[in-house]
Image (cartoon, rainbow, N blue to C red):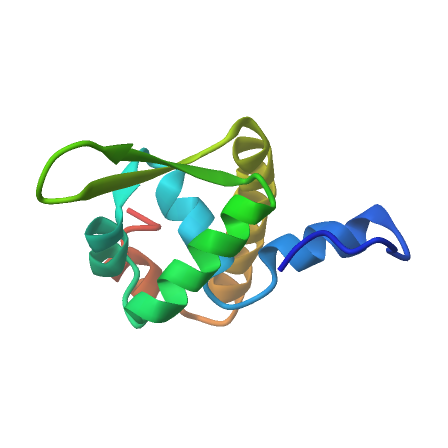
Length: 119
């Protein structure tokens, strides 16, 4: 997906960048540091390789993610957040805080503890 020529407002563009189930989670994982495709596959349960690669490509097209390809064999690629990606991660972190609060209100503290979001 590329930037369209017309938007109703800037929020619509930001929504285009992060829409979908996996993009905020990808940004969250890359916020922890550089990751290979296999690292991301392992850390994001349920995402398929094709979907992950598609979302990484879209995030690259929007300038939120970039990659470093190492020379040699076997091929090694690491993905990382750009400066704009790091700024967008702040929004994702705020979304996470809201999600934690809502889960706690709905009695899901044990699940949050299990997943490491609460101690």
